[in-house]
Length: 175
Image (cartoon, rainbow, N blue to C red; front, top):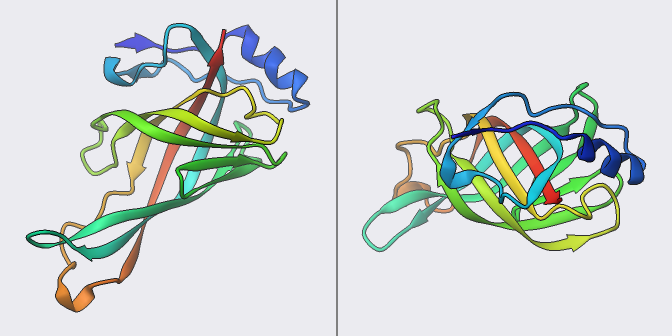
């Protein structure tokens, strides 16, 4: 495990984007399988609060809750609105910049009742705002969000359920 910290470079990148965010990721212990690439540095960190939306679907042998999409608001270190997180998975800043990613690794949350921690590679960018240079995202500090353990059967096929969750998302960019 490696401790992660915001480096001074993240502040200057944000200042260039016209966004006044400057805070650290703290001394979180991040499992090796979801560490950001060594050639990247922390760009920014936001806190998400919202829901993981699941749909009851029939599988090969049984019905199961399947993730449809996250639906969360993003906040900066001062609790001010930063943007939103939604299907894709995508993150959109209030300046209009947006990234979409693909999960490449996960690690169990230290909280057994919470969704896993993730490493996500950015696969597309829109807009030239604060998220423009991001290439990797980590999801850490998850609370809640797990699919229900029961309640998905033929009688509930197609039904959606929203499970509250919160998490921290750390965005990384090349050094």
